[in-house]
Length: 211
Image 1: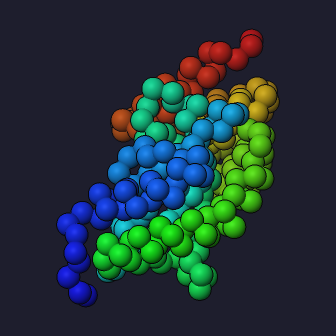
Image 2: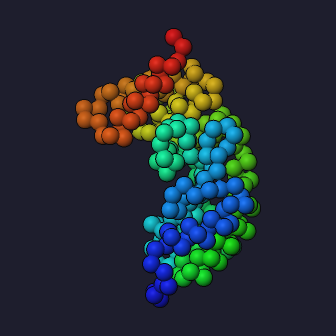
Image 3: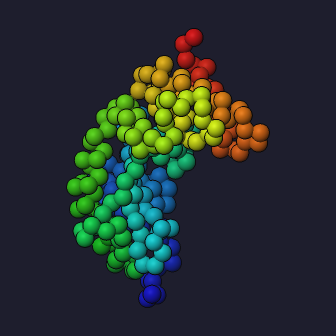
């Protein structure tokens, strides 16, 4: 591996990608996270990921952040509901970060590839129901309606799906998953902080449902 001509990838990449992100409507929301709001209440995002590859490459993910679930949270902490990986011109997922020049070239490649790959994907989601439908398919392992009342372990998709259905205007369907989430969370003898957060969200959502 050749010595890099920079110290911090996030600093160099944020500058390089901000230039190509701005025309697409994105603004920085962290060192390597860029977001743009959707009128329906969520945020579309892309991010730069060096953790999966090591070496002189990085990945670019894009997806939908449920910012409306937790308006007070920083966007980088809001739930990521759906996501994909941007592919380079060769169809692989690696972009070069070997030098400042290579990071700049990767940003230019992003500017060409993102409209081709990500924009059509985002265009498929115009409502909370669209997102809920896709989420249910991707998380089907944890979202078998026939097993409501029989699950033995809480998993975040159960609560998130309930919250999604609520946003989609299906309170009756949402109630089943929210009730299941509360049952599983309450049965946990020692809840972690993230589980307590889910329990608060679930209780708040259930309290707002018509009786």
